Image 1: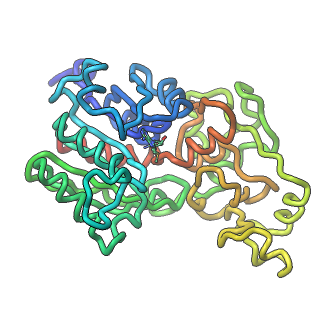
Image 2: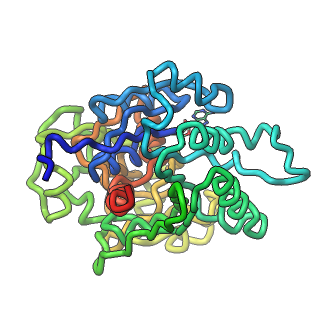
Image 3: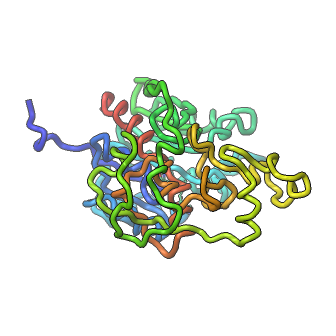
Length: 353
Ligand SMILES: C[S@@+](CC[C@H](N)C(=O)[O-])C[C@H]1O[C@@H](n2cnc3c(N)ncnc32)[C@H](O)[C@@H]1O
């Protein structure tokens, strides 16, 4: 039997990598992420600091071709065993005459081109769940047929992160393709009792903590112990200070409540259906977004910090977000695949490779 040290890790390229939630989970499962490509430098800065050994490349994937990028990094065809990524969904369009040059198609097409060029043993493509029902399922079928042309057997499934120990209801569709005839079987949901928002963040204080400061309290449960593993200090816990008016309104909403708990004259103050929503401390969080400031802490009169959002996305406290400011950190977190969910898919994928 090979010793652990001599076992070669499976090399992965991550396209539209963002800060690397997907990559980080795969690394946890035992893969080696060699390259992350994105056109957003803040996210790439986070990616490279949290994936030692990985390279990053800032490129517009609608313009640069797989061969150019791979040559730049000395990546040869056949060397990469898994290609992963989440092309933005406006890249999916089969409207009109299926014009292959439709600019909206370029991002998705770039992912297909990378798979066709690198011929990995497998790929994972993540997206929003309504992708599979858009245009009566035609987009989903086109994705499957595009990859079958390159000899991949594609399976897809909508997974909810809360079923995999992530303290968040977050549904995303995953397409997994295996080169050849074998059908990938998705991991079965395991969690009997989902992790709640309070279990994820109750140990984090109401006020900001300057980056690198030690924890102010002990962990209060197993999730917090696990998420703090290897970390003695906090980063990215900078609060957003809302106006007095906003604080006054949200103060009237109870744990788990929303605009309906407010006097009727305030119902229209925010014109979104999730207006003035507070997390429910006893349930997994709502889906973390990219910082729209509509969902508030279950107890404090502010929205969650980037660290609280990262906890809800299952990023460990050792994963530090870099980039310009806290709005950038919140966007990076909100874009990401929860690492724990990615790890569950990765562990299953290992069985096929
Ligand atoms: C949904 S996020 C990916 C999140 C990532 N999979 C994770 O788990 O952290 C999509 C990413 O696509 C990137 N992106 C959008 N248009 C792009 C383009 N033309 N070229 C390269 N990257 C692009 C965005 O900057 C964003 O980071």
